[in-house]
Length: 308
Image (tube, rainbow, N blue to C red; front, top):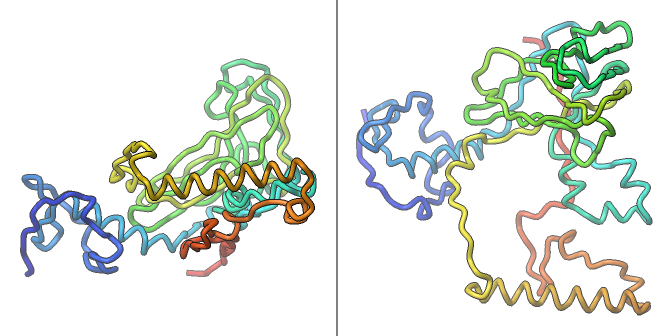
């Protein structure tokens, strides 16, 4: 048996990417607290800060598995999130696609598609029967969409029991950057690393009326998240003037952008030809420094059916 004691030290001194190699503590499922220390399975005592670093490192290495246990013989399709949006296509010169954060967010998860058309009407009441639902055959109301909570909330059953790695959950929400008139999605973060039951996707009417989800229209978007990681974050506010390096970079970008927009407004030929500054799209600063973590496109894998 290995034993030892690691004294407390500030979490800011922990580098989880290097101090804890993957698989160092496979028995983290048996963690007990004792006098401001945490015992990890085999008598190793860790400080809370060090344990946090281990959990972060584990989440980084285990954000790799999403198992979807299909409950019935048929279920809604799950597909990788698509970057395009009709409203983005319709913007002048499709300029909405120049906003890389939009397209990345659109793709950062999987869409759950409605297998049939669903129409729901809410009369403004709070009772279950105040929502009338029509679901195209062969699906009946209860298996796909229902009024389960009242108060103008439309509930969808996903048809799967999801399982993720320890410390990783599912963020279930509406489709990113895709507004739907008359109804709004309700977000939920679910601990799918342990729960042996399902969850639902819920939408709340914003006013009395009728809404429709067409066949193959996504009604849920799922993204994996380390649901305990944010508890280790210590937010801080610093005056920009007290960070000269960052301040100078910011001033350089701002001045360049102001000048570019001024030239664009005046019809400068070279600026008009360039169209827009592509620093973020390229993951580079005006000085030419390139981020090693930058991505301009994300493509997730589609689920594959596997027999046990």
